[in-house]
Length: 110
Length: 112
Figure 1 (cartoon, rainbow over the protein chains, first blue to last red):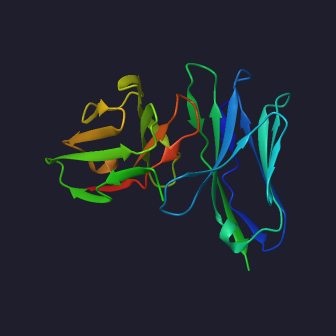
Figure 2: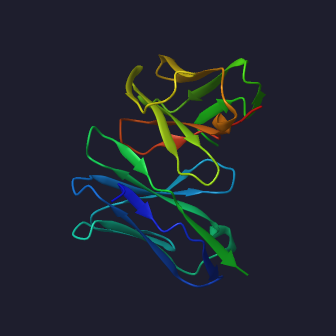
């Protein structure tokens, strides 16, 4: 099993819809989790950290499920500008090692 | 806008050239990273420096040589590269290891 796995997509979603995708991780000792957003030909930028209690930032909600070892990202009322690749990032807990997932491509359709 | 800058933004080099990529962070962070991102591939961590000491080297070929003269600057020296080394090279920094990383805009490298 890969250390961090994401569905590469693409997810093609109509504007205004709700979309969610997950990221699974293999190391149960993983300590911290992040979602990054990367636009085409640009650098990754932090979207949000993922806390044990879950967190919400406007239309974005991130949740952590330790029992099943996955994190999720929910985007409500999607906008055209949400089109990007969303990268899951996990601190595996071993020597503070951070692993990036391959990313999930999201296309919001007008 | 960004606290992490990289130069040059674009670089074309021949296989016999020697060049260097520069990264500078203005965030007061203690850790810096080099990543490689090839087309349709995930980010690959190359090197990690913490407090100017290399803490990780992920089996990167010796034709890539990092240098961290101080906590604000990170270089990647390139020599005798191969065409398959063409990629986007991203620098990042974080306050401590495994904390939130902030990325520079990257250097897009083409090796001919």
